[in-house]
Every structure is written in structure tokens, then in C-alpha cells.
Amino acid sequence: MEQFIPEKEAARRLPDIIDDLTEQGSRLVIERQGHPVAVLVGVGDYAEFLQREHDVASAAGQTHGAVLGEDVSAWLAVERLELRLGMGLLSLFDPQAGEELLARLRAVRQGLALRLGIVAPSVRVRDDMEIPSNIYCVSIREREVFRWPIYVRHILLAGPKFPPEAFSGVQVTDPFHRRPAYWLPDSGAALPEDPACHIHRPIDVITRQFYQMALIRAHEILSREDVHILLRHLEIREPALVAEVVPGVLEVAQLHHILKRLLSEQVCIRDLSRILEVVSDHAFLASDIEEMVVVLRADMGETVCSPYLDGSRNLPALTVSPSLDHRLQGVLFDPRSPADIGSPVEAAFLETLETQMFRLYAADIEPVILCSNILRPFLRRFLASRFPTLPVIAHNEVPENVTVQPIENVALP
Image (cartoon, rainbow, N blue to C red; front, top):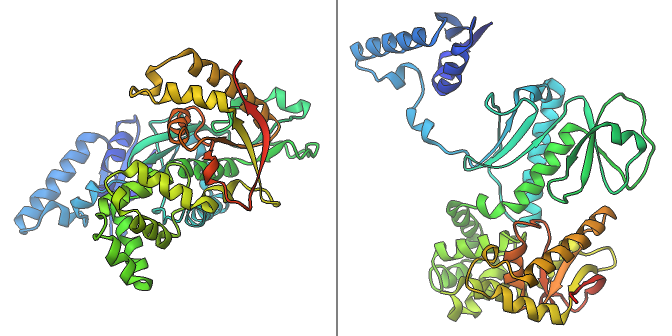
């Protein structure tokens, strides 16, 4: 197999080139200004080519980086948001589908700006020979946070109900709602329409899951530089407020941690002006990030609840019974990590909640869980790894013009 690659690209893709040249029968043609300058058959040839170019550059008083037209400092950059595709998924980047996928990823960034008030970095999309061919991965700051199988020329059936044809497909588990889904070959035949069964193409699956993962991990995406940019934009409109709070009440680093805590529970930070006003009013809490977040959430009740309201401003909720709320306070206030407690109350609560959530997800209902303001931060931290998309809201965070719609009560005997 023969590949042609520009010289500048060769410098940037050094690890990939080495992998390519280790394959038997691979030949790499290095081009400079559209003309071939070297034909490489193995890794040894590439090493000789680099050494020869280095010698030429040294004689001319240049650096090797200058010969290859690449600043080596660019190799030190860390990708903040990356989508890697197994080699079997490259067909998603044919001229038509590739444009659609990139357009959808841009829409995801716009959606994050509206939903959470952050400007997500550009998404780098690349192939990866080291992962299984039908797998795609999401990485934040080059740390993998998610992977899932994609079947090209298939459709994914997801939802509480499935047609009989679904059960002949490949069964997978929805990573966010922990319910079954099925990949079926895309034969082009129309499936029976059912509002309880959702049909997704591979590109739909990637973009929907990418958006959901970005929501859950938004606090890891927000950088200190992003906070500076948000403050500079606000300073144009409200310079006195910014000067009063930063650094008058707290430093940018403290504000960064507060915003990350809000984002970790998918609370929108777009109204930064209001956030700074609340921080200024409660300056005595500036050194206590957790307490400041509690105060902010109570003040921002509309922002906290609005993503989960229906058209009549009802809030579908699982309510924690007062007796269970009290018992959980005794368990989750333990200074040890909740994962290390393993109390009978904790185990029974998790078993009950998982049963109820499975039943509700199967009915296509996505509620919040409602509890006391004392228990709320501890319960959220306890449930975060098991139910990453389950919002935990305190009673005092529900606005007066919102009606709580109890779906089920979480209680123990």
C-alpha cells in the first residue's frame, strides 16, 4: 500500500507514520510543494530521511523544525475535546456524511452555549488505529471519558418498546439510562411507527451521546482561560460589578471552582452577572466554595429547574420520604467516601431507587429526585457515578410558580 503525504503533515503525524511503516508492504511518499522528495519503505528509511534533512539544515544554519515547516512546540498542545473513530467508522467521513457529522458537532457546541452558558472548544475528530474498528471514543484533555460501539449501515432502536424485529439485532445497553437498545441492519425497509421506539442512524447516535457526555463533563471542559474570557465579556457591559467582585471578593481561581461546581450538576452559568451579584451579597462565604454553591443554587432556582419542566411548568419528581431523608443524612454525612460506607440503609436505598428508575426510564419518563436542602449536596455526590444524568434538587430550589408533580415516593420499610 502506497501513501502520499506532504512534508509538513509528516512532521505532525510522526507516530502515525511509524505505525504505517511497520506494516508489511507499506510505502510512504514524502512530498514537498507537490513533488516527491523521498520514498520510504520502513522505519529505518524514515530515520535516514530525518537525519539527512537535519544534516542539510545544520549546514544551512537552520533547525530541523524549520526544514519540515513545523514548530515543534505545536506538538506540546493538549486537545481539550476530541472524538476518535475506529478504522471501521471512517465511512462516516465520506463527502456527504462527513459534512453532516461536522455540522452536527458544531451544533453541539452551540447547544452547550445555550444550555450551560459555556463556549466549548473546537472538537478534533480523527481516526485511531489502536481502538477496535467499530468503537468511537470521547476524550477531554486527552483523557478518555467515554467509548461505545457503532455499527455502520445499521440503525439503533432505543426506547421503552421494540418491534419484534429488534430482538434479532445486536443488543447494547444505553450508557445514560441503562436500558437495552438494539442495532439492526439498515435494510431500508420501513419499521412500524411507534412513539415509544426511537430510531437513530449512526451519526445521530454519536452526536446525541457526544452532547450528553459534554453536558455531564462540562466542568472538566471549562478552563481558567475560559473564565477570564467570560469576565472580559461581562466587563464590557458591567465593569463596576466585575471590579467589585473579582478580585474584590474572590480570585479568579475561586470563581473558577464555583462555576465548575455548578456545571458539574448541569446548572447554566450564562447569567454570570447574577452569579457575581449573589457572590458579592454573600462575601463572607467566599472561602467556603460548597456553601457558596448552596446559596447560588437556592437563588438560581429557575435556572436549576427550567431544563426539567414540562409545558405546564410541572416538575416530574421522585420524592424522598421525610423518614428516609433523615436516615440518609445519618449515613451520607459520614466523613468517609460514600463508596466506603456500605451501610444497610445505603444498600437498600440504592436497590429501591434503581428499581424505580429502571421502571421510569422504561416508560420514557426522566424525573428529578427531590429531597431536603440539607441532604441534597451529599445525595448528589453519592449518586453521581451511578446516575450521572439524574438531577438532585432541594425543596427550597423549586420556584413558587413551579408545581412539583410527584411520580413516585422513595421510601424504605
